[in-house]
View 1 (cartoon, helix red, strand yellow):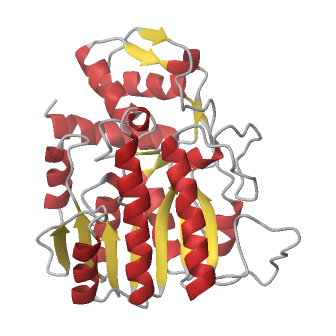
View 2 (view 1 turned 90 degrees about the vertical axis):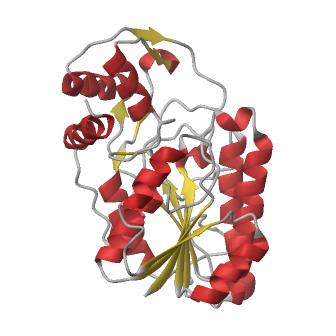
Length: 335
């Protein structure tokens, strides 16, 4: 198939592009290579597949409607995976306009080009952050998500609403995936695995918020990519059991779906740090701090819907995943 993927210089986008190329698809990647974190890491990810004969790369911003339209017109994708976004909960506290421009304007442009380009299926990145102030665990797609605690989370919830309107009005099949704490080789340097690994390597103290009581549903990158591909191949359709008097937020009478995609095994952050310390051969001081604004104490994905409908089965243990991450980290940093 011809598949357009946005954010292919990013963590998940690069891993997904590799897998799609490996299975024989033709891929057009779009990424703006911004400097939210070191662009050198983005270039290094891209170098692993940029020369592939079935890959084409466009350096552009999804918020640039004209550039996006040109890319769609030239490539004519059958399906689209939209992963490009301004990420990060804490960054959104100081740079709200970046989220409005990328996550709202950009996503609106993607919807429009998919609509006019007769795309068979749009799969897009949502986030576990949409659960916000919810305390019922595990988080299920049937739960209401009306109380976001960061602008980042609010933009991701807005994406789900925008997608539904296009599914309803124009019959565009859309599927949103609420990602839960993705980690592994080539991960983002602003996320805890890389931040902690860097500090442990240098022997520096680690700041641990919520006094170390955070639990996160860490999900290994290979499991995430497998779930994205299975979802992409399973085109969203109207839910025949949808009841407008008792609406299910995860489905619709339109060709629309939302799924959690996680490991379904939450891990305490202190144990995750312990695994990093063991693998890197050094113990460091932990500075226990209160909860940060916009953060949530626990995440835990109920992935039963994704298991049932696409056969999603994450199977990488936290111990195995951290070991693979450390092996890559040592090689990447030359230590």
